[in-house]
Image (tube, rainbow, N blue to C red):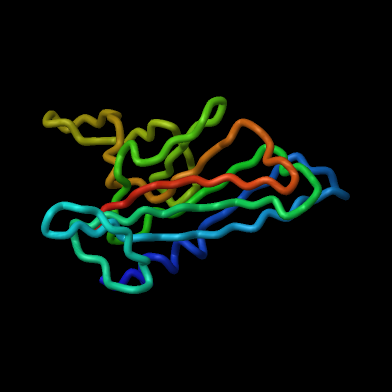
Length: 165
């Protein structure tokens, strides 16, 4: 699988939501997405390889870093940043974090709904339906809700890892 096919949907879907800004003061936040394959050599040493320089192989991990830089003199209020889990990959549980008071949410439906702990309906042996914690392999998106504003001329980064299927 060519990595560029994995990176393109993420570049298109990385988003930022800046809510609460008044009609006159709108901050400009620039986003940069960097992906690296976490390639292991014969001795198990991990070397990051840019995603656009080599095809990803099943079983390899890719670390994505989204850097958001507030380019303006205005505060970006209620800052939220999100990324896509590319088709052909699955989210590595625990590979992302955020400092308090922020939290991370996941989507199972391409960003229509979000939850810190997504639930999925599963059929029981008796035919009834029950809710259980969704398998991280079914996550389609991840977002970081910072719980604080992004200051003028400040930057922040969010990282997550996916496994190539």
